[in-house]
Image (cartoon, rainbow, N blue to C red; front, side, top):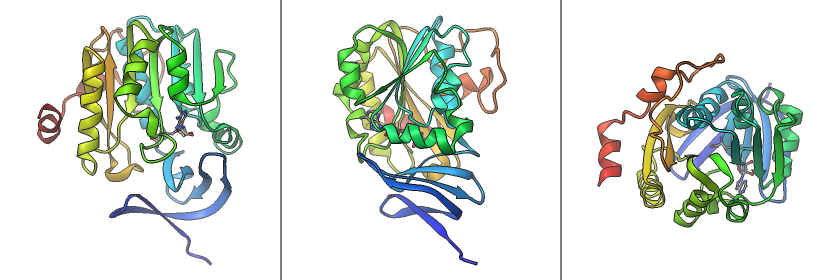
Length: 276
Ligand code: SAM
């Protein structure tokens, strides 16, 4: 029997390897090399340009943390924009909040949506919900063209090394600020502080320039390099680290109200990194 291993090297000197049982789809889309494979340990896995985006086993951690933190910090979110996120995991979590009227998903690559619907139904299951509007296009352009429209913006992007590059940086965060309403909150996945400290620091500093409140929190995500992942939040009014409700009204697997506040407590080397 063939012993097939996938090597994922997000940076050029560290790699993670996974035992692969089957390749379900591999396609060069208009923007990237898309693959969905069946792994032995993590179940189905979506890769873009060879980089792990999500897996059936650990996706709940990332998708719960990138959505419930801003949605439970905001007092009354109604309209949410997801930039990227074509697998649908963020939309699925957002629509667990009954007060949400509308989610717009702005994804550049329609093939990510198409193949996530076909091969990752556990993750993409809310993309056909009538409250979800799908827009195929570039996130930066969308944000620039829609001012003062959203309560929460979730930037669920690929890494800043390929098609997702323009979703990182000061001019994008300024446009996000203007796309939010006066008490809006934005969140982005912002890479590993252990391997990419300069990048994490730069993102934090750019968000700090664009927003009156900027904070970083951490979550443990086994299939992202080092397992140690950062998210950066920019807020106009609410403290992102405060849980604004009395309880979480639906079941979760990772997120809870104690963790909401605790995940913002940073190890000393990360505090030093962003405060320098
Ligand atoms: N959870 C993931 C991670 O951190 O690895 C991100 C997953 S999601 C699949 C990322 C999506 O962002 C991809 O489907 C990609 O096509 C989309 N994307 C990249 N650049 C974009 C852009 N400029 N505008 C809109 N979507 C973009």
